[in-house]
Length: 103
Image (cartoon, rainbow, N blue to C red; front, side, top):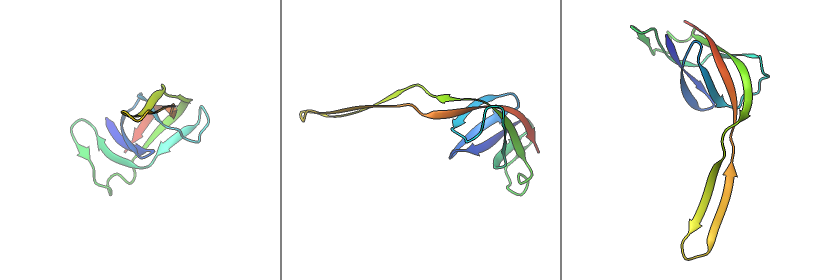
């Protein structure tokens, strides 16, 4: 069984037992997060995508860690103009362990 949930403007396909990294959430390590906005449910044979059927569906996950991703380099350059700008960015994330998918 898997579900597609929405968090931080992105969609994630999750199964029970998965570990995923989402945009930083305001929660402490060990807290339980409930995703009420389930976009799709599938049990292997039947797929549900109707909003009326998914209104009771929930996905619960436990916060395991917070951190920052690898650095990416943002480099701007204009040829023949001596224009160069180099900037780095590291995005914050929250790591979640999916515990249960309720239909």
